[in-house]
Image (cartoon, rainbow, N blue to C red; front, top):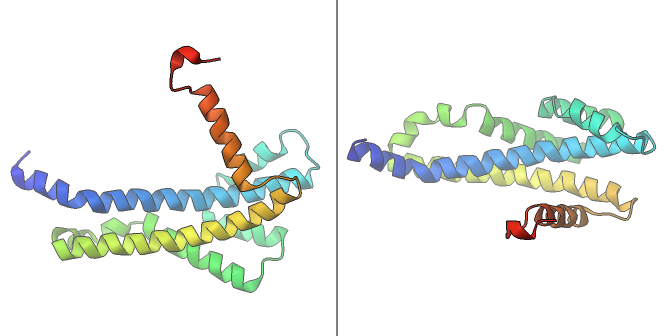
Length: 172
């Protein structure tokens, strides 16, 4: 690798890091909608064994836009929230469907790289806001079971730590 190649890789690293962060947030947005729809299916099935998993398997194979359409069919989504989530899907699609390819020429210029990194960060924040909105819906549904997103995440962390101890000799 030449020095100029190494310099370019170093210069691009912040852009790729921001892209990774943005894609991760896009995935959490999609997973949150899948979780909401799966939890709703579980509730509709009166807690029948396998209902949540079957719904998750079904919904997780669908594109994000289809998940919002499914949500609209199952509950009355207020117009303002529907538009807000739809905008989030557009921003998500902007990130995951060729953002860097469309902006490749800008990556050769230091100012262009900074602009691309900033734009990715702004798009990521917009998608994250939509994920937070979906998580508020999840919390409202979980509240009927005396649960919350926070408690589920804490329990998942506790289970992970129990099953993956820092000291492998202390495994149960």
